[in-house]
Image (cartoon, rainbow, N blue to C red; front, side, top):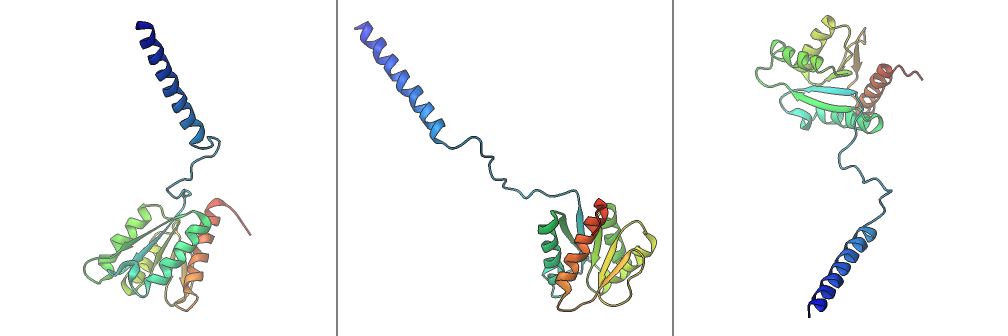
Length: 171
């Protein structure tokens, strides 16, 4: 009787080990790396300053879409920061400075007050690249992106160029 118990226990262990081995073998090819769940970004970033409506605002939506297009192409991170509080340049300047301190490869602004604040900071921060959506002339470290049907593509180009310039890549 004792021998039968040992044989039954041994047979059960063999079945259990066989089941584990079969499960491991049938679970898939270990040579394939799992698909990453999170997007892998480069060390580059583009930052958008908007009014209190954020990226959902009518002026900001095509700009944000262009930044996302560029992010897909370059793997640069894109982020946005809405200006809250009084609609004054003095209130918006600290928001621009926040994006400068985050070391964005390019700081883009859309909307009256964010654009005015960005123009102000750009004049005092020559080592940072800025872009504003609106009117005016491109000078120094400030690029002006006209507000047209092609704004989305123009924004994407500005972001791609900023990333390429930072990497030292030329066309």
